[in-house]
Length: 86
Image (tube, rainbow, N blue to C red):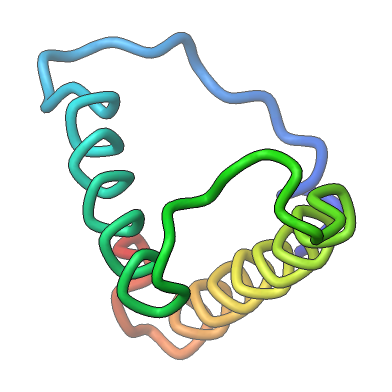
């Protein structure tokens, strides 16, 4: 039900779960280490690449992965399998 997923309103956030920023900071440090190993240098400005094109391509990949997850969740729910965990 793509229309519902694209337009549904979500409730106000609440709860006392883990802080997302803390987890993102860990992921950024780990991802930076992967880039350093792969490219031999940390990401720097004026590196000869078009950052806008790189970011746009990464955003397209992200959208594809997100849609894949939504489609799989919807299929799991229809099949009677658990569909809430992604």
